[in-house]
Length: 487
Image 1 (tube, rainbow, N blue to C red):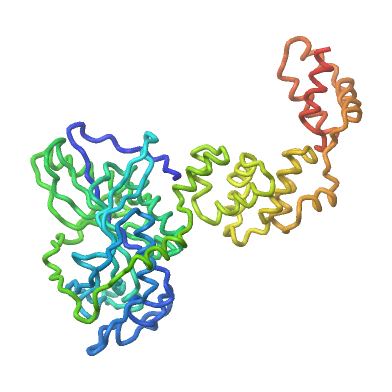
Image 2 (image 1 turned 45 degrees about the vertical axis):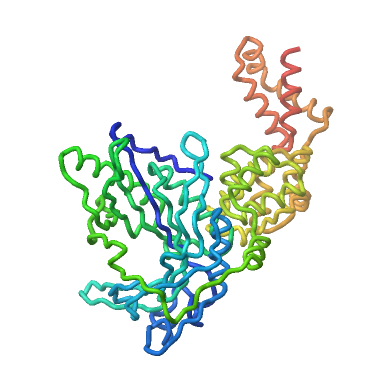
């Protein structure tokens, strides 16, 4: 997948970094995990709530089947073993945004075990980031702290379905962390189980970082929370690695604690000491039965799985001859990948299609701040434009003009070419007369060229193109001009 230009910080040669990541993926279901309340972001505070998600006495949770479908799909996509029997537990802590004072989650018996996510490292090799587990749980509400010193609680988010994806400590630097997160985010988006919007909290996680001298046991880890962009994740990891190494080198000790990233100061700051798992007092939830998943359920999910981004990435290189860079950008979203394949199916020119999409289509979308679904130039239109350029009906410069008109008004290129009389002049006789006239009108430049000044050749070709009002076939003009000047 596409990577950042940011470089991995060179750290102390005697130390190595060990990183594990826990990612919460908010699932895109219509209702919450254990009740019928709307699972909707951006509503007025405390409107999507009921006795179940506000923890009223005597209420009973009912598991949303779509949540289980999504968890199974995520497990298959990340090469996990799907547990045939899993269990829900109560994880106890006193947070004001969870009225029950416990969170329903999965403890020792999660729905998915093991697995891995492949990433491309900085040197181009593939590394498998092993997963420990994927489990299902409910989200908490949201605390809102006012400038007046008052705090309010919005329970809308309480009961929102989540899956938590936990890695083994396999990640060695910020580059690999970013590559893993980008790949995982892309997989979840391709599956259609989450909108993975980091700013809205749909894809958020905790980064566990420790450093150790090479060959020694794992060091004391710290946990980074509340990171909502890849840029902040990279910056915070790089800062924290250097901080821990400097601390150990000066004779200090790393404390196990939870940190946040101060975007203004560009440094990590302490939030609280880190709780251990036993502090949560996990107990099986007596209101929820064991979750039993049979082979038929898993196979039904597997058969409906879409092609995943890393498979599409490899296929685009092998089938269409795209570079790793082109493929990586083309599979960034399933919508863009589908658009590309629809164009190629019609024009049979994958490299030209890739160039036009990555340069012109994405540029137009960004400039006009629209999504691909609102783009007026459909795949059939772009394919027609590419074919017209490839056949020499118009040149690339005219193609740019046609593209803008096509993208703005949704017209087919053939109509635009006809309306604006843009058809390229490709006839040898007509262009030959124009080239000869240009040389007559520019005797000084011709003399300079024949005297050894090769730079004036481009000037003469430009004058010929100008004489055709941009409609001349530049390849033919160049050949005719070279032949006339050299003869």
